[in-house]
Amino acid sequence: MSLTRKAADAAAIAAFGLGLCLASVDAKADGTNVRVTAPPEINWSGWYVGAHAGWGHWNVDRGYPVDEHYVQAGTFLSQSTNGWFTGGQVGFNHQFSRIVVGGELSLSNANIDTSATVQGYPADPPVRLTTKLSNLVTATVRVGATHGPFLFYVKGGVAGGEITAKSWDPAPHWSETTHWTGGWVLGTGFEMFLHRNITWGIEYDFVGLEAKTFNGPVNYSSSAPALPAFQNTVIESDIRLVMTRLNFKFGP
Image (cartoon, rainbow, N blue to C red; front, side, top):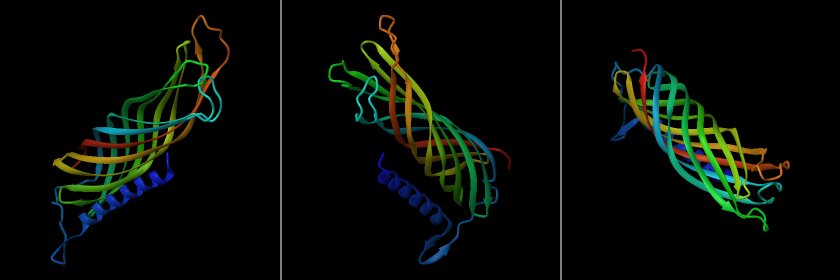
């Protein structure tokens, strides 16, 4: 993944989210500051739990720094795919006048994958390479500002993705290795009260997952000689995710 592209995405999210927060604190009309105060019954402080669902775009870079069983050194694949994400979150907010600060832990099930057929070695049959994202975990800090029943916020923190690298050829030889890959997340969104204890919102997140080496043994068919061999590939990826969220807030 290009560091420049990641930095641009992160800067755009931060600027947009902070702009929404600042705009919600001070609204201007005819050059005069107009401050909008939420009704006293609206209180964002407290614990909450909820569910989310959304659509994600996953970019995957898969490279081979050394010769391995399936593919020659220097082979590189850049792929992308789309899919649904569903999951839940738990968090805590504390409201200071119009400012809301909190933390959140979320878990999403993705179950999306991308595949390609490549010529690993000139004399060998083509190889099928599959990369799969199963789960995504984030732990973030949120900072926002209220405007009537709305909360506009930015968030940032750490992320982890459960990724599986698969390789297969017609011999058949196959390998499947799964690792959790660390990374970071930056996002922005809004929520609004539908009821005294129920909020709904929309959120956009950018998740960058760091490069990680997937090294695992190759399995042979029963008729093939059991010679030791390994899959050795480096995978780096990022996710752009738009989701809708529904939360239940505990307390008053």
